[in-house]
Image (tube, rainbow, N blue to C red):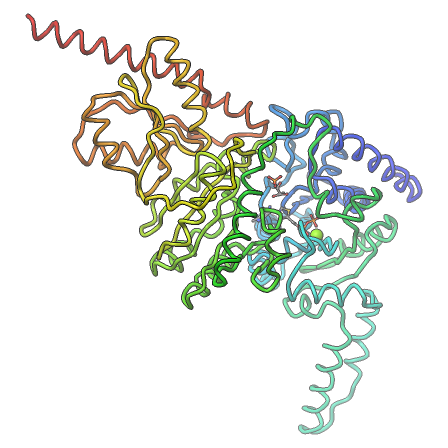
Length: 616
Ligand SMILES: Cc1ncc(C[n+]2csc(CCOP(=O)(O)OP(=O)(O)O)c2C)c(N)n1
Ligand SMILES: CC(=O)[C@@H](O)[C@H](O)COP(=O)(O)O
Ligand SMILES: [Mg+2]
């Protein structure tokens, strides 16, 4: 067993390794520097994988990975076929639960604790959740249930006062008060026994004494919120003092029932610029950064456009679930009273927008595609049934790259397309994104504008807004042999494929589909009548997306034509760079050209066969 000074040395070595390694590969920086001592202490006190350690979000699990035999793989972190950026059950038995999205840890850990007790086993289950993730509704649903069941379960609240941006909300303020509290767990026990000694005589006096006890308890017992939910609260403990953390973890380990240990840490600990600006160094690019494009990112064009539109229309308000970084930093500075960071609470964010929209306001929910998955019922039940004019600005639609399967924006087009009353569009470039956002605010119902985690293509942005006709595609290139029906960033790839096909003597027709819903039925009918084989090209799951929409239309219209639906296959796409992943799934100009050639050859073969049969 290492001594505490030896564990301190180990922590220093790990921190140095993290800095050197993450600045080279890129990855989640501040959160990992903040949990070095906590992770060392956890692995010292608990016996993983027999004891289960469940990380929330999992972006802070690098130290856990290092301590469980994966240090050598760190040069491959978040790269194609390399070490995943989040805990993953298939990667190690020490990764008790796969994760990437916030606020799941207490539910998962409670499930494990229930199973342990049903099976008569005795191991420990520990959930480690950040103060940001603790703002999510799921975390409270799980606390509520755990407090009711009284299962032996340890929840560690890793409180660094930060989500990606500074943490928000009433619970966050409550934690601030707790952090300032001088009381520790043992004092609380002493205090409770003191309360028990307050005598109560006669019914009136007894009532008064009870009320007095309650008042004193609320004023003095630390962590009363968690205590009232059925947890024994310990803390706050200074989270970079490995000796103290070990001591409290060891104490908590011996307790029956649910325990919440409040650990105070600093995001970015030990790296000056990460300590000073933890939001900027939440996640960093590596030393091998891709060459800087001269075009702005879609996210930044979204942010600037929104500020511009909001200057002209004071009904516009912006809502984010803890993702100000997704284009809203400028907006919140310009319009602090019209921007609402609700914490990691996508469901609440969506219904909040619905409420705002009922009053004539024009709310926009800025959300990553993957996190919108959390709010599907709210999209349907609260927004679309009531046809409320909420704009969804869906960032990270399509493959995101290094965050991998938990974060790919693979599904939103498909799951949103199933919902009535919703318009869904995606621009071919950052200029069209401006026009689509402008158009979205002119509509009287719900509308989603999707855009990728990419730089734009470099089109001029200083042009007047245009209204995009709803449900109308844009023909970019006339052709007669094969039609390429593309969406979003796939449009440029399709145009490039058309050039390759031209070199092979094939004339490709290229359409910027613009809309997943409503799709341009007139354009489709015309193409079908021209008897051209078609390829639909989208960076989302083929099942349910644009390709499905096109095929459904032809099937229902009884129009017979050849359609090859190209998009993401029916499996989860792991981490890697966007170009590597696009290549892996066949979303490249070369592959599109190959498919087009074989479709054209098939069609010509068919025509030739038909002619022969007719001539016989
Ligand atoms: C459902 C969901 N929404 C948003 C995010 C994006 N996100 C990742 S980490 C993070 C902040 C988490 O804060 P906290 O739990 O306190 O961890 P810290 O980084 O401070 O250690 C957010 C908002 C997410 N992963 N999941
Ligand atoms: C863990 C998490 O959900 C976020 O930190 C996410 O990794 C950010 O992704 P971007 O780098 O695409 O903003
Ligand atoms: Mg935090």
